[in-house]
Length: 322
Length: 294
Image 1 (tube, rainbow over the protein chains, first blue to last red):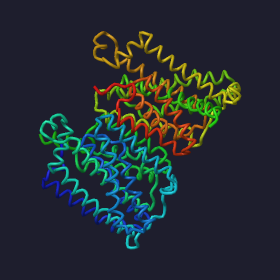
Image 2 (cartoon, chains in turn blue, orange):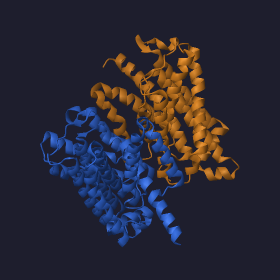
Image 3 (cartoon, chains in turn cyan, red):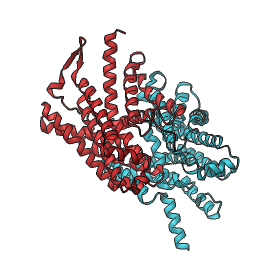
């Protein structure tokens, strides 16, 4: 199942090649003037959302727990950065350190309740907590700006579009390696064991709730970091970051990319964002029907390829080899 | 608080609750039999409201007859959409894990909500109430909007109808058997997949009915589906997934709660359904009338 996680040589070569190309990409795009600048922005967003999707997949694909409230931690990260930088004049790097910490604390509180429930009930409780936080941010005008959101988050001067892209890419690569390490560690193996057979995991002495909670917190922390990075990219934080439809985005990305692989969600997320922007460029009216396109795509994946693109690729690859 | 204000608020709260019940009971019924949480239930409800709007412009519906025609025509139309969806899509995922089921219904939300936007546009709309229901009724010397009183009367009728259908008819016996022992039911020669289809259609009929009633009560817009489905989740979670009686209790709690908390809390009252939903899930995940997980 975990084709990309095995420390095979091809995996490393592919990873390094992709990273190098991604590092050189903005230099090429920078030559293209306005359009290039726009695409650098798009690519930065792709990287950030890829991190968000990977963070969710720690609980979804590896943990087997369907959270419909993951956007809450993304939102907490975004608002942490916005509030700290706007109201307390924190420098960016400190705000980006604080974002995952605050998100992790939130995830610890929410997760403590959620991991007590199984299956569908877990999903609904995460949804309930997510909407609860959404409503609080939505109503608390004096602190969060309510549905206006928080605008004008300051941007350090050295961070032009290209430099910010590189910063995000470096953070992403580090996070990718850390998540890879987590997934392959004994902790990651225990999480997968719980997904496959919770009873057996209990029998061999794994403290199921504690492992799930820890996993939930780690996932929340990475989501918070992604939220903080997106907030700085757009220079605003808005209540939509918390909404449950935002929680669905990384789930779709994981499904499209393949949730039983490490890179699948990142690939799926990038493909979905690219497809959206691409359709938008083809014709402006395509934006109107983007949700329909996405919905149909999702239907096809659910009905015909529930393993996602990575799963499809692995199936074809294995068949052609044998 | 004077007792008149209290009664006034109580009636408004119950009215909101009844409306919520009509929609949420459909969601709960469908979950009970199909074991699928249908995110698209809110979208079907929204389509019902917009269909009612379109039809009312054709019928020039200020007459009571026009409004009754809406109530007769729109819900079956939504049930028909439900039929198509169940037979072509839902049926394929009953044996899949629940993530795929949830995502299938979520895909339908994306498609249906966007279709509504493409067809009807983003402006808020409303259906003119029939003359007979546009005024107000004097109760204990208070002027209550007669439309709210109408909903307050229709809601219990629907609840009674559902109770009769589920507990006093052979169809109801079969539906309840399908909730508890679908395999045994199949072995006894009942066409279970047809039971599932009809239950789904009944759920959609209720969503459509709620949609028509909402269109007369307040403005309808593109956000109503998403907002209502979450409120319905709260209702069915509080009452117990799959229990229609629970949906009634949950709806009335949420409806009256929202109204009464608005006085001291203002807009913060909107937090109440989610807080209560989270609380119930933490303390008693299967809700008031539900059964613990099998």
